[in-house]
Length: 158
Length: 287
Image (tube, one colour):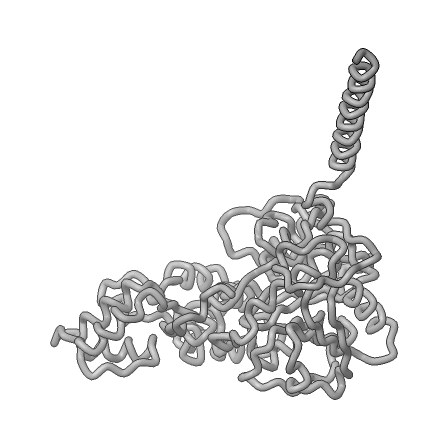
């Protein structure tokens, strides 16, 4: 009887110790975890693909953003590689096309088209873009401003 | 434009999500062009708060869009003002018009700052919201503030001053203001609400004669439509409605019906041709 009580006490104390230990471990992990805001602000190099469509404003650091990007740039240039490497790090799907042969029908199936020449050239060729074109598009630098000018946009070069 | 953006306000969501943009701010001497091109009566500060978007170390290479009239239609947004040495304070470094987002900076990502990279990524994430929303207006005219800007330089034109003047302002003003830029600026400043374009920057004396105080307020449109049933002023009102709208009303009732059914979606754009225009239903709905 006394022995059983003693054994029960040992088991009880062990359970309490295990519970306290588990609580401490759990709390310690939480403390080390960065706030959501910080995590979003510091992307990691290793990215994982999301398995379900996420709201863009809810993405986390380790996720690639679920957008399909078409980068229209100058092939085989350091600049294009720079962009594509960066974009691929952050977006789920990144494909490229040649700026010089860019046509708006190539943007079909993409969420965003990025049209980039070299950032600075005033006399860059201007892709033929109709006024009916309405794909979400980012135009880059001086050549981008001239594209906007040719479409009579307020974002154009004046 | 070089590497920097103005840092007055970072409240737009392109600074918040998905990545929080936390720039390192610095103060830079206000560029001389800001002072010389400033149209306000206030005086700009000696230094301005900016942050670097990229690190090329150059004061040129990028491009800003003119500030004047950039936001006079609801299809545009200024996302960041570009710190520049060529145009006015307020010129747009990164802005959106319809489905187009123009990134005025020149560098590739490896030369962007951490804040610049996050801002760039956020812009890419933001623009799909406007997929399918082509611009409502195109740049078909020059905003009224350009009248003041150009008036200020009439005596600094190298070449045929009179030709420049009469191609920009009504020729009848040449004698009085041809060599008086300050007087010309004052003339347009005092009549700012009546400026419109008919090849040159004109003052709408017809509108003024009706006792109306602006050619771009929604109240004005309502009053002009109402005047269609006033025999004394109907012809003038019809002429002004033709000037400031693309509508043709058979009578005042037609006009009132159009006005009432669209009044919450009507805007006036100088850049779009000095017209009252209507935003299509659903255009401004958020995706």
